[in-house]
Image (tube, rainbow, N blue to C red; front, side):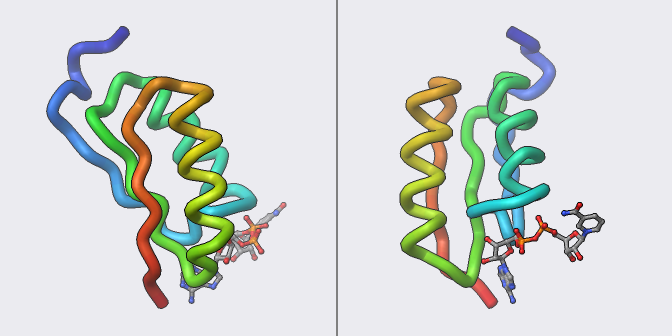
Length: 66
Ligand SMILES: NC(=O)c1ccc[n+]([C@@H]2O[C@H](COP(=O)([O-])OP(=O)(O)OC[C@H]3O[C@@H](n4cnc5c(N)ncnc54)[C@H](O)[C@@H]3O)[C@@H](O)[C@H]2O)c1
């Protein structure tokens, strides 16, 4: 695990799906303290955050934004 990202958080816009979800996954695997999936679709963001957290162990938070 890369210590460089410890204590850091990422906010990924459009992170519930598509390219941005893949970016969020890559960040979660880097050892960040948390990743926020900021998306218009809060239902999908909630589902994706749960899946990402289970898959990577990184804290993932859904957030509704436009
Ligand atoms: N998929 C590709 O191969 C590809 C290639 C080149 C460029 N792009 C561009 O990259 C971007 C993302 O592509 P994608 O295929 O991952 O898209 P996508 O349609 O899967 O959308 C990604 C996410 O963005 C969210 N979103 C849409 N409008 C939003 C808003 N106003 N605020 C917050 N969240 C919002 C959606 O709910 C969705 O979860 C697009 O602009 C697309 O044109 C995609």
